Length: 485
Ligand code: ADP
Image (cartoon, rainbow, N blue to C red; front, side, top):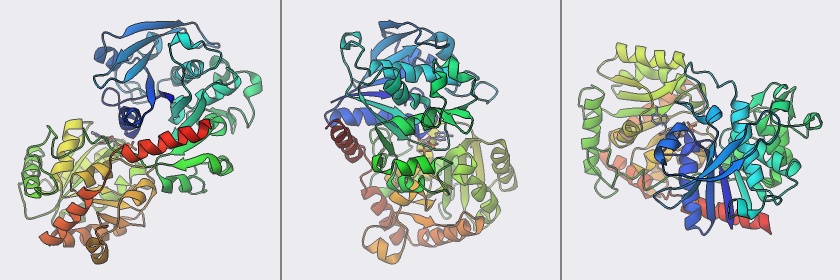
């Protein structure tokens, strides 16, 4: 089975969140599950730098509208994955974040940047395109999020078919909505401007076009698949999603266990595993030192690694901060995002220099050290399609404390004596998105933490889970196969 994966980010080279992690790991796992996968991704500066020897494969003349001509390069990763790099310097040769300019706002031509990516993906997946162009033609075109969601549309209406298309929703909150003027620029026709086309309440929506026209839809957890069909969580698209419920499947993400494994993680002060948890203490001390907090083994260390947005419920953590510090407990925060949240955490750290410390920024190595060094990981998300950090935390024996939503509800089992003893409890779960409910659960977690025996059991339960991509990759492979039948 030949699968063309098309994505706007791919770890470890270009990553702003979970999508990058998934695109970095799932194709690899699919190969191990027997698929022949190639990944199409823009040739950002980071990809240029990582693959200086990429070979020129094809020139792609403009495909309509203001979509510029482009070139395709091919490179191979050190694990043997084939990358197709979409080269178009005027659109992609820019520093920094793939979506945002230096001022922090969206690039003004994002519709062209990702419209081109989608258009090229559709062309490579089309029946009419001679397989010789790539020496390969995919059976499946697997798209991810709004950035590539126009591809199934282009494939159906502008290429007259080809590969079967799959669109995975990693986060319904991002929909790729643009003013009507971009229709022409994307090489689309006035006849596309209707509710079964690309129109969405007077705007053009990349995501909506894909949700309507991809052969199959998936999202990244079973609970989120249900939630997005409701008014509360559907972000306005619940009606469309409900109408496609028969083609919508939730498959939990995995984690890259070669990167996230406390027994072989070069970022850590000390390696440990499920049977050698004592070494985790050295990571806690190192983390406290790195954050300039007193090295106290006698109080619990809570942690956050996150985009700082209201999605992640971090305003609840900020609101509970003073009382958390008074428990006493410590809190370290690594994140970047909303200025109000950045300020709220910085002010908390100023008020409680012995208990709370904050790093504003994106730091992969520090994220690893936090997962290993913290006692309890906080993830009180308002909504969470899947969430990766709670799985990293589980794998690192750092029980997560989460709100019961989306993938958090599917991966974290609440502590109770019965759940501990039957091996299922692996963290703490609460329901109400209020500082009081969060704080109540934090207190509950601290009481369990104070009992070393129960805590060790909880950690071991967490670390016993299989969070690898093996099972999810097999599920994707089976879905592809069913689609081709
Ligand atoms: P989302 O994709 O919604 O941001 P996920 O939990 O699915 O949330 O994935 C987030 C990924 O980004 C994780 O790999 C996490 O470690 C990483 N991450 C988020 N913020 C930071 C940060 N400030 N520094 C380092 N890694 C971060």
